[in-house]
Image 1 (cartoon, helix red, strand yellow):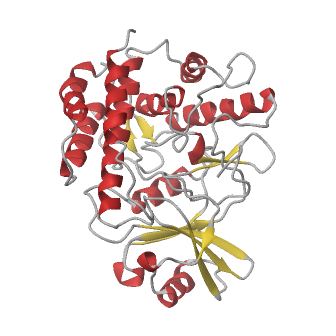
Image 2 (cartoon, one colour):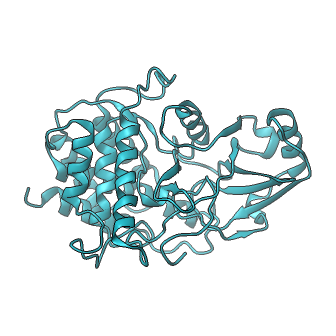
Length: 362
């Protein structure tokens, strides 16, 4: 999707870039639509029948579909078919956290129902309301005035701070993750997921697995961690620089707020347009904040007096991306994704970049 935004978009855009390219359901992801219709009638208040299903193209994570019923539109997210990596594609967690955040001030779509009965359409799925808004695919926001770019990034920053201020126990997420030792557990998790892939080892990943634990900060803050917080994973109002929905909660947990901050900060180092990149931006005139301004704004909003090891936070975040990329490539090779071609494994390049960030001067 070119340009500053994808135009009108769905609340349900997937990590690897599901956009507004709608088409018929692919053979790989076809399911019993009559069974879904019966489930909707029994579980979704106000459902009017006459179900029509179309699939959003792209995306290697959780397949996403537009459901139309009369004048009502919904979005369905489901697990992909095939053998899945342990702890991946947990759409039930996406549903739970968004349902819990309703009314907290963190913008999320309205959840309509979760189905864990695989007899219905073959995999776990959930249904939520369709939202109309803008999802910005190009992080440089071309064609916009500097003041609008500033406002868009400012609300992105403010919404992250707001999420991290939510009392996760009070909203019913006390058992959504294990508080404390977040980075230790996450490094072990992503190392295991990387090694579970039936692909050759990546030397830089092995080095990261060895070095990252010694750099874990002493700060043991706990918050709801989104896990994939970046510009492309939020939806803005159709005309205002205001977020109306934070999307893609598949990797969320009770974790460390600075993991989200470090992940969002990778934007200032990423060179891949598919993830997001600010290459070529003139920070003096564009209205887009510098990396330091982004970090300072978050610290100001959350009452922090600086950060202990920003390089670790960045490197850890890229390490996660490398492990995810390894898994995506393995699934593509196995024919388990909607992507037509397997492409190149992004893990080695990302792992090298993570090492460079970890070793750069403070």
